[in-house]
Length: 103
Image (cartoon, helix red, strand yellow):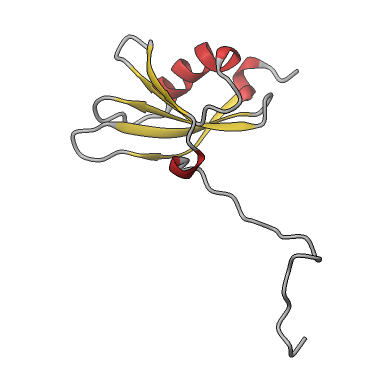
């Protein structure tokens, strides 16, 4: 098990003027990324990590985004994968990959 100080990290954030702010936070223990959205301009990821760490053990693995209130309670959750803002590189299997004819 990873110690609490090292367990959570925010990869990046989206902070539009006036808010809402979204921080993409990772839980290294569960190996998952969840976007934490809060009202207002949150220039620092510490509040997002605080909210995420309080709720991470109770979140379904399907949830990729949470919207939290000012007091840290979850207002809504998002599970639709087509709206998942976290990105990963797709590495197809060699069987599925189509190499160029020159190779």
